[in-house]
Amino acid sequence: MESAIILIFVMGYLGITLEHNIKLDKLIPALVMMAVCWALVALGVDSFSNWFDSGKHALVEGFGAMAHEDKMHLVEETLLHHLGKTAEILVFLLGAMTIVEIIDYFDGFSTIKGYVKTKSKKKILWMFGILAFILSAIIDNLTATIVLISILQKLVKRREDRIWFAGLIIIAANAGGAWSPIGDVTTTMLWIGKKVTTPMLFMYLFIPSLLCMIVPTFIASFLPAFKGEIESDDKEEEGEKSPHSARMLYLGLGAIVFVPFFKTVTHLPPYVGMMLSLAVVATFAEIYSRTKFSLTDFDSEESDAHAHHSPVHHSLSKIEMPSILFFLGILMAVAALESLGILFNFADSLKESIPLMGTELDGTKVSDLVVILLGIGSAIIDNVPLVAASLGMFSEPLDNPLWHFIAFSAGTGGSMLIIGSAAGVVAMGMEKIDFFWYLKKISWLAFIGFIVGSIAFVLMRTLF
Image 1 (tube, rainbow, N blue to C red):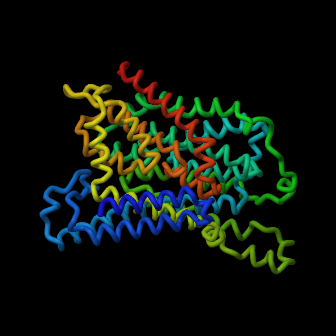
Image 2: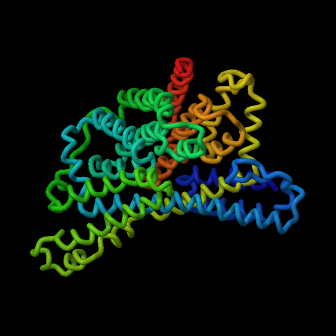
Image 3: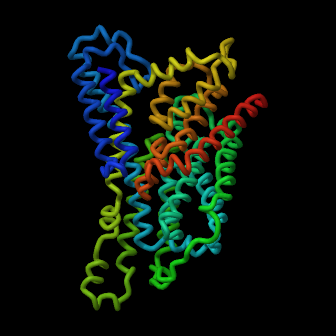
């Protein structure tokens, strides 16, 4: 039965990657994969010898000897646990995307557009790369990607040009998220799990993460896609700007930046703070929407209807629901593999089969190659269950170099494939980026950045 579940996952994964070839939206194979995998788990529960407890990050002892009713109860609990964790991400994503759409409703991003004086593609590339690196550490890589691609859509009108920028934003955002405890979900897992501390995370990972962003951006700046200048849209400039655009931009971005502070103070999941931020932004949006349009606009019935349309309802109607459902499908499908202990056993077998070298820990050695392969694996599957598996595999103390290397590898390794990270998946949804286009054009840049950063970490590890 395990083989059948893996086969379904592989077929679903192929369906996602071949989206443009088979003319089938990626959310369909993702949802089918999720439902069928969990159905097979429920039907074959008596044939499984292992079960992975995500809460304890360890295999359940004596699972094979349990009664059928107890096993089914454990399946239901695990399914509910994963749905809850996935829902946290989806609700957070909905809140962040709605705030971005509200800012856009008031033409807020046109304010930033006014600050960008250059038309040079190379300068814009560096500008967005640095912004993504810094913003992802302050908010997180997912939200930073949403915000920056929304701004990019106002600056770069040609989609063919824009997807190149989006690819480099993904690399920079994942690199920036790796050295911050709130920048990436896997780094947050290690931080909450008392494996890393913020000062040591910065000391170990800032320079490797910076190189992981700088090297691909530097190489990309010489590619033909970033030669010349972006095309300006004169018609866009002629439109009347909302008098509240700047105010809503600063309010919206400030509300997003507030979320990690709320989490630090209350210790509640980030989506709670995001919902509070959304409520505040929505309140001001409703107030400002009454004065958005001038009195002359009321001559037209269509303008009158638009003026009285709630900005919150309007923004929610523009949310990319297919991307949200795709997230649900792929994360829950990966959870099925995790629950059977498949990912845990895979990570454990890597540890045992690869020659020992690298970090010496309590008289034993853990291969650097194992951690690098975990990073590559996070691009193919998902970094969350692989990091969860590593939490159960290793028992090293707080701030051991191993945990920092895992944080870097899992955080930046996902950039190598478009569906290997949350930032990549949301960019894929916002810009309709093709899996194979990313694989051909961007993956090699992400791989170079990942390897350079890994080498930098190994060298820095000897200094601390």
